[in-house]
Image (cartoon, rainbow, N blue to C red; front, side, top):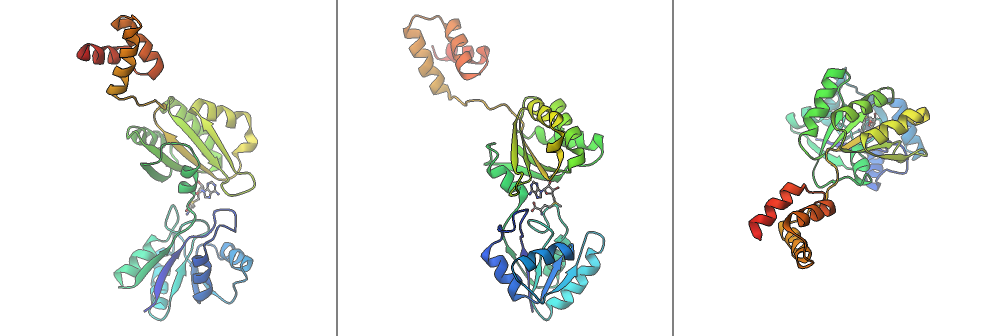
Amino acid sequence: MGILYVVATPIGNLKDITLRALEVLKKVNVIACEDTRVTRKLLNHYGIEGKKLIPYHEHNEEKAAEKIIKILEEEDVALVSDAGTPCISDPGYRVVRKAWEKGFTVSPIPGPFAGAAALSASGLPSDKFIFIGFLPHKEKAKKETIERFKNLGITFIAYESPHRLLETLSFYKEICPNSQLVVAKELTKIHERFIRGTPQDVYQIFNENPDFLKGEFVILCYPEEEKNVFSEEEILKLAISLKEKGLKTKEIAKEISKKTGISKNQIYEILIKNF
Ligand code: SAM
């Protein structure tokens, strides 16, 4: 019984491949891939020869899965996609599912994933995030999707094609104008760039530089303005020092509001509760 290895490959820079990925690609005789030309290029780059390539894609995946399962009965198979991690906004999961159903072992060989690479360098809150894959094409569905994920209050990551990017940014501008937006372009490639700011800022940059609209993009949105988080204890500490300077409660609330970005009324309530 063979093992199905799910092997991540580069998202641009061919050097972004792990030692284990190369080891597996060298070891197996059969590689299931999306576009044989793309995979050949990678294999040639690393001098890997004599492999049987079995193409699979969204439209023939069930059929290709059956073929791959037959081979797994005899030997190991590596599953790759054109770029990054197979099954992530890429075909592959039907092959993986079938392999499990038929009792084979499936083992991931982790590596590049554009969404995670973009998040790691975005500077947006990243302890919790949601990856939503490609945004829907139709305007109504796209707007509803942005609205839905905006309401969760955590960073959400989407893929978008270059010819839809500008219009999509205009939707972010309309739906979540106060969010922090980052567009990560051409990750790991020569023209890698991070465009950061409010949706208005980011939209304007792309609108004024049509050349930027070429390439591959990840859109990351943290749906709130960055606020300093002050605890009640810290607010009271500030308040006491201002009180000692002779300020009245209302003046203190105003000062602290300016400093923390928290509304005057909210501060006032904390003060009267404690003073
Ligand atoms: N499986 C891939 C992964 O692990 O990220 C995703 C493949 S999906 C078909 C292709 C989309 O991923 C692109 O349209 C773009 O949104 C994003 N992407 C892939 N490579 C990228 C790169 N180098 N820079 C920015 N975005 C990239």
